[in-house]
Amino acid sequence: MRFLPRICRAIDRHCSAASVILGKGVAWLTAVMAVATTVIVISRALFDVGAVALQESVTYMHALVMMCAAAYTLRADGHVRVDIFYRSYSPLQKAWLDALGTLLFLLPFCIYCGVISWNYVANSWAIREASPDAGGIPAIFLMKSLIIVYGATLALQGLAELARNLITLLYVNDHE
View 1 (cartoon, rainbow, N blue to C red):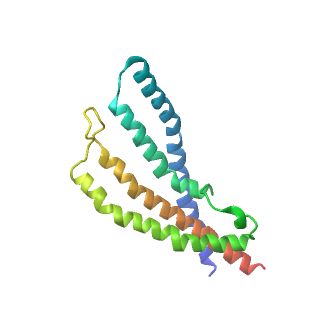
View 2: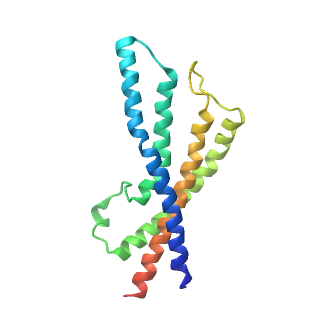
View 3: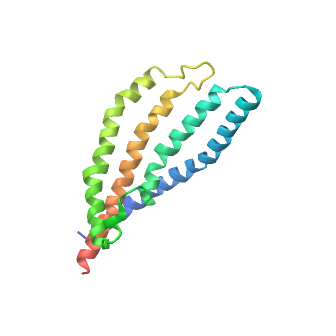
């Protein structure tokens, strides 16, 4: 059992590093979205000019931020939860609850997300699905691919969190 903490730390280190790189990498898109939205509003209001590709780019950026930063948010413990009871739990109780939540809810959800969306994304790639609007971005298939990325990165970070909780459970149980 002595090897398990090393394996857990390795999983945590590598998965968490990937989540942080991806999460911080897309975080700057929120500022770009704000600028793009401002440009869209001003160009419409003042000049009566619409830019379909620019409008769609805001949707693409939003999808990137939401789907690619979910794992980073999990890593940073930023997901919403009901803290009425959780905040008063001991580290051991939190580790048990988090480990069970990961095993019973998060990982099955990620697997379901990947399985259910696979054909949807594959079909979009097969036809190289593009925007139905004239002047739109011809890459809807890329945006739909983010569903797979979302499930995979969230599952990997979930495994890292599970590893971290196992370390806590092993450490607390061995040293109490």
